[in-house]
Structures are given as C-alpha cells and as structure tokens.
Image (cartoon, rainbow, N blue to C red):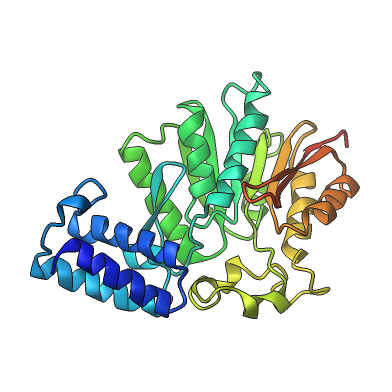
Length: 302
C-alpha cells in the first residue's frame, strides 16, 4: 500500500470512530511522519509503505479508533516548539495552555529588575509550562516543578533532563513531589527569598462535567489532573484553586505574581478570589478561541 491510500483509509476510519474529519486527516499525517517517515513534503510522491511501517501504522490506527489520545500512542507531544514526553499519568499539553506561558513571559519581561527570575510551576504534569518558560528566560533563571502524582513527576523529571541535555533549557530546574506549594514551604529556610512567579494549570473541571468530556480526556487522562474538587464541596471545580491561591498568598512577597489557567466561565470567580486574598491588579486574558482562560494578580502589601 502507498502512503496516500493509507492516509485516505485512516481518515475514513477515524471519522467513523467519531473523530472530526479534518482532525482525523491531520492525525493521519502525523502518524505517517512519525512512524513511516513520510512528511508533507514526501506525501505528493506517494511512496510505498514498507511492511514494518504499515504494521506500526495500522496498530496505531486501531488504538486511535478506540479514542486513545494520539499523544499517548506516540508517547510525546509538541508544546511551545518543544517535544514533551506524555503518559497516561499526565495531561496532554494543549495549545490553549501556551497562553499561560505567553502571559507569564509578558509579566516577567515587564519587570526588568527580575534578571534571573524564579518561577514555580504547580501541578506541573509534563512540566511543559515551567520548562517552556525556562527555554525563553536564559541561563540565570530557575524553574521549580511541583507535582503530586509520582508518575507525572517522573515524566516531568525526564523532560527536564532531556531538554537540558539538548540545550533547549539552560536555567536551573528542580523537581518537587508534593501537594501544591507545600514542598516549598516545608523546605524554605527562614528568611529565604520566595519565588517571583507561581504559574499553574491546576485541575478545575466540575465533577458534574467530567462525564461529558471527550473520550480522549474522560477515559484516558488522569482524574487527579482534571477534577477540580476531588470530593470537596461545593462542586464548582475550584476547591484546588482556592487552596492554591491561599498558599500562594502565604508564600509570595509583595510584588510576586500568580497566574492560573482555569475554565472559560471561572475566570471572574477566580479573579474575585484573588482580590479577596490580597492580590492586586487582577486581570484576565482570552484564549485564541475567544474564551476567557488565564487570570492573574500581583501580591499586595501584607
């Protein structure tokens, strides 16, 4: 079989499985390039697929028909121009989360006094947010990745080690196991300077909404990274966010920043929460789909 015939068949099978046709064709192209070395430039030549490549492609396609995320099938996903290892223990890095990186960079670059900033990525998952920031901030910067899930923490550590070895990340990286900011609070000696910026893509899905998520998310991504309440009342998906904001207030010095990705209909409530905890200049930003996505604030005088 040749590449173009395989691609047409793959797109049809994925559409039958419930994948949007345009998305299915794109995913077929990604599989062809990743597993058979047939990228867009070679596709018009319609090369034949060697038996071993065809077998790998067909096996991957069967998994994708079962709505397993493409990132899990490939074991990696691109974010901010970098390749991150992904597993069932982590969320797949999403394009919307790049807005969190953009806002963090904008905030940091507006403060030239922070020549060597310390950024903390809470609920780090793959580490994509903190490591992407570090790839832009240079050798003097530091990123701390904090993750509760042991499996996700291991993935973040491997991503950090590989990106440093490749030279994509030059600053200091440390990886902490624990719940929200507790590891830093426990380890900080008296008088130690706090981080300059805390960023997080925390779990924020309402428990009642979990069943309605796409199968790729509902059935394959970790509930720990999705459920914003984890059994705590009142069921609005913001229990974890409330704890994180309170802990950030206790940790950050005046002038320190907190940036969060939350649901499109949660930014106003989270902004009010930030204000109630003493954060000033609270602002929101929309994602590229026009939905509110990121909310942030600066710690005021305590």
